[in-house]
Image (cartoon, rainbow, N blue to C red; front, top):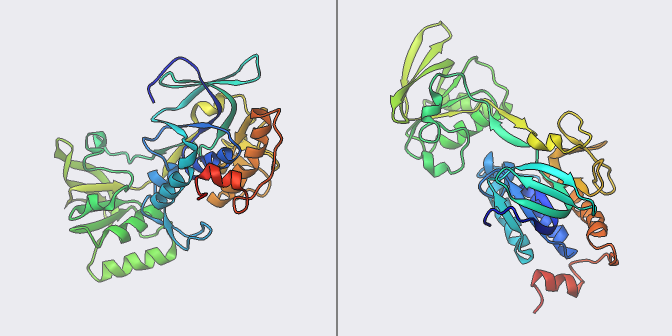
Length: 346
C-alpha cells in the first residue's frame, strides 16, 4: 500500500506479522473485523521467517513437524478470505488517544491509522543480531557475511565458517555441512551452550573428518568488495592462523529491542507487557497484547499459547468495534455464516 498521511480508518491495527499476529487476523475476521498489519520485516512470519524459516517446529497442534516458513504460508492461506492489508518495513512510532476514543497510530514512514483497537503482537520486539567485534565486518554483510539462514540453497557449495557456541551455531553446522563444500565451526572454548545431542553429533562429524572445529576467536576478515576470501583466527595458544572461506555465519545471539512501543504509555514489566487473562488487554482500554510480548501469571512463550490469546482477545475487541451488535459464539464446523466468510460452503 502506498504511504499516506491521510488516516486509514480501520477496526484494528496489528503490530507484528508473526504467527500470532497472522492468527489474530483470522479470529478478528470471523467476527467481521478488518485488520491492517505493520511489521518491520519485508515479509510475514516474524521470528519464524527471520530466524528459522527452514528449521522444524514440533509443538504446533496437528503438525508433528512443520518449518517456520511452512507455518507462515499456512497461516497466510488461512487468513486470505479476510483480505488483511500489510505494511512491511514499517515500524509503529507514535500513538495517541483521540477525543472520540479511537487510537491514532503513525509509523516511521508516515502512514497514519485511525483505529478502534491496537493489537501488539510484536514477539520480543525487533530482533537485532549481536555482531562480533571484527573491524570492517559491515563491508561484507549481506554478500558473504550473514546473521541468519533464510534459504539453505544459498550456501550450497560454499566454504563456510560458522562462529558461535549456541544452538543456532550447532544446528546450522549440522544442517549446512551436507551441502557445503567445506564447513568449520569456530568457538572461543571447547564447551557449548547448545543441546547435548547437537554437540555430540558435531564432535562425531569432526572426528570423522566431515567438518572442522577451531577453538579461538575471529579477529580479521580478508577479502575485497564484500566478498570474503579468508579469516584470521586467534587460537587457544594466542597464535594467529588463517583459514580460507567465502562465507561467514556469526551466531552470537540476538538483542531484542522493544522500540517505540515502550513509549506507548503502557505498564511495562522488563520489556514485556502485562495483560489480564480474560481479554489480554493492557493497562490501556482498547490496546491488547498477544504472544511473546505479553506477560501474566503462568505465561508460556509458545506459539499455541498466542493462538489461544488471540481468540479470547478478539471477543473483547468486538465489543469495542461493534458496540451495538450482539456477540454470538459459533463453531466453524457447524455455522453456515462462518463457513460463508471462509468461502468453504458449496
